Image 1 (cartoon, helix red, strand yellow):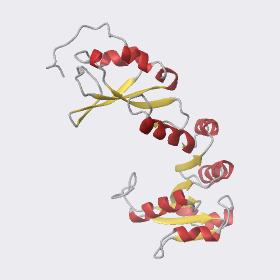
Image 2 (image 1 turned 90 degrees about the vertical axis):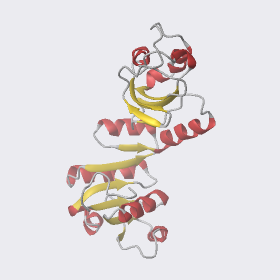
Image 3 (image 1 turned 30 degrees about the horizontal axis):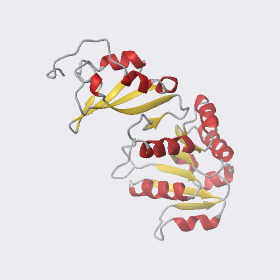
Image 4 (image 1 turned 120 degrees about the vertical axis):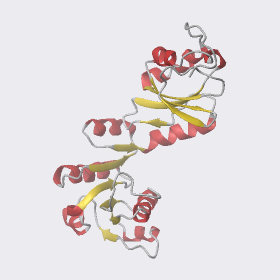
Amino acid sequence: MPGGRGVFDVAVHVVVVGCGRVGALLAQELSRAGHSVAVIDKNEAAFRRLPRDWDGLAVVGAGFDRDRLEEAGIGRAAAFAAVTSGDNSNILCARIARETYQIRNVVARIYDPRRAEIYQRLGIPTVATVTWTADQVMRDLFPEHTAAEWSDPSGQVRLVPVILPLSWCGRRLSALEEATGGLIVMVARDGVPHLGAGDLVGQDGDVVHLALAETARHSLEEVLAGKPDEPRQGRGGR
């Protein structure tokens, strides 16, 4: 949350379970944004990742131990993040924060994408590390293909950046939504973002950010390679 407090207009207290690289970085970013932070980790040596001038709380213990949670100030916390290296521990901690302490803003780091989907359905926001990392690598390896730039924790919805093929230039981009069953979130044209598609007419160089179901993503390249049935529009159209 560099440069601001994110979704919070005022400083709040945040509890972070896990002081690995992710947890330590998250704690520092939250602190820089003006929030008070307590970090819990069962390994006291892990707190060495925090800066020497760290002014937050460092609590040694398990993130699902009620006494340690109370010591970390969970009773006054507005947000909670479980980012240890264990999926089971993260989910247990997140459920305690959500169900016992009624914290609304809770997130758990999950390595197994299948588990992430299950817990997402239970109402626990998750970050599926493996899925996110794989998508990022695919984008860098094959930038010309349709690797997702974002996916929801369940992996069922993807946001895919598409470099508009010449065959789609001069045609209404709403036809791309109809062909894929997706939704155009934004079109980048000449460095200027345009939200939504509306009656926007495709131009050479457009980058279309398309949200669509994972099941439809595999046929997206076939759709892009095909020729739309809609007649061409003039380049002056929006």
